Every structure is written in C-alpha cells, then in structure tokens.
Image (tube, rainbow, N blue to C red):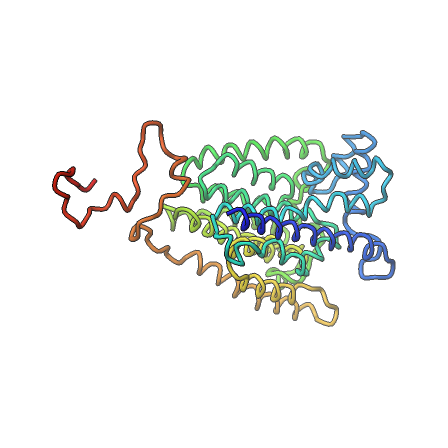
Length: 425
C-alpha cells in the first residue's frame, strides 16, 4: 500500500515542478523580452506591483487603496512579495515569487481529491490525475500567467475544495474555503450559493457564517476605497470583448452594464433549482461529482456572461471539469479545453461577429451538456449493499455498534443445531 501512495506523491511533485518551470520560463524569458506580444508589461506590474511596493514601505492604507479589485488575493500573496522586495527584487522576480505558490494549488488539490474520493491508486489515472498535469499544456493557463493573474488558479482551487467539503457535509471548512475564495476575487462569489445548496444540512448556519466572513473582509474595503463596491469588481467599466454571449447587445446595453450582478444571481438561481430537484443528495463520490458538475456550470456561465471574458476566464471551469474527471481518462477535459481556446484567442484575422458567433456555437452545446448531466435523475443507491468504509466508523456515536449492510440481510440458511437462532435485524 505504500508504493501507490508514493507513486501518486511523485506524480504530484512532478506536476508542481513542471508548472513552476513553465511559470519561471514565462517570467524570465517571455515577460522580459521587448517586442513580443505583451512586451515587458502585464496586469501585475500595472495593477499589483505598485500596491505591493507601498506595503513594503509599511504604508498599509496606501496599499489597500491602491490595490486592484482583487485586493484579497494580494493580501494572501503579500508575504511572498515582501520576501522578494526585501532583497530589492524587480517586478519580474516579485511576480514569480507570488505566482509559484498559486500554481502549486492545482496539483495539491488533485492529490487531495484522489484521497477524498478513495480512488484506487493502483490504476494509472488514480496516480496521474489530470488536474495538475493538463495545466502544463493548457493555453488558458499560459495566458493566465502571461497576463499576470496566477491567483485565478489558487482561487479556483479554493472554490473547488470548498464545494467538495460541502458535499461531504463539512459545512464550516466549506464556508471558510469559499468565503476566502470570494474575498480573494469577486468572481468566486458564484461558488458560495453552490456550496450552500449542496450541503445536506445546516444551510442556514452556513449562510450566516460565509456572509459574516465576506462582510468582515470586504466591508471595510468598500468604506475605505473611493470607488466603493465598484472598486471590488461590481461594475464592468469600458472593457468589452466579443467572445461572450452578450456580444450582440453592445457595451452600453443593460445586460452588459449589469453583467456581474446577473452572473451572481444566475449562479444562485442554478444552485436553488438544483437543490429543489435533488432534495435528498447522493452520498460519497457521487455527491462530490454532482456538486462539481453544478460548480462547473456556474463557472462556465460566469465566463460566458462576462463582458470582460478574457481567455483565462475559462480556467476555473476547466479546472472544475478536470476535478470531475479525477481518476478517469480526461476526454471531456481535453475536448473542452481545445474548443474554448479556439474561440477565445483574440486573433485579428477574425471579425467581431465571427468571434461572437463561434463562441456561442461552442459554448452553448457545452452548457447544454452540463445542464443535461445535472438534470439526469441519479440512480437509486439502495439496491446494492454498500461496503463499510472508514467514514462509517468515524460517524459512530459512543456505545453504538457498526453493522455491515451485508450482515444485516436475512440469511437464507437455517440456523445450525445447538447454535443461536438467527433473526433478521
């Protein structure tokens, strides 16, 4: 039993090292070479580096006010940035120091999911989980690093882990994880109603807890920053890309201006409808995969309904799909990645209408596929005796005795003479 776990750990370490090498290569070669597609600047040096520099000078107020809308993620990455800035590092090295912990979250999440789902590590896909390895060759991940947003990998991992914990009926860790994701980047708010609705119980307590957590972090920031709620990403501003479903309405239409509010409301509606259709959730790995399917739907809707739909906005959805296919051949993961990348890369040879139409042609069938998987009625789980797991032992109350479902069935054989009479329990 030691060898498969050691092998799985080795594959995880290889995935982390591969992601680190790719990130370091982008930072040290691509971002430092003038005349390329993005040259020397990305969103990190424009938005985050000046704020982190203020924090290195112990100007906390200036750091909070100068930070971009994803100030929560900067707070989490601040210790790594301060270490680099203490050695007078330039922005590329500082960016690398803050990016490496973020990209390591995906392989670590994959390893954790393999153990949570209790997958057989003797099988090939039980050891080589696609969640970490596929990011190495994923163009959305490369764009995520090039454009300066490695925190999207970390935030998506937090949201996925929180929803998985909710499906396991662990409401407090679930709310802490999705709440931390929501205060890190505002788009992760779509994971909050999903985590609440997939909880088998204690949903009211979970709602109050996550609301207090988000209010405690974002409330002071809203009061301190001049833009208020808009400064944390509530508004859409002047950014308008054509690889999204609102492209034909134009940047000044009502749905485009209020797209971010509509995204959160749509995520809440999807979660409530799913809960109404599945009042009694399934158990074990089936419950986790159902929850991840719902999360992938709201992640894809977030990207498709956002006028800012950059190519790396598809990354949370793809990570959720990768998580669903943990322990399986990543067929859907590869197909979804190739299709979404093909219609979101901003090539100048395509016109605006062509890009919008291509995106709709690809995205709508994927949305329909995910919705169909959610609407499918789960197979009943009571027809076959379930094996006793370690979780059953942990849920026993003091004084209770664990009875195997197989042992509880009536025996077809008569009781032996001189023995104790066997009666069905």
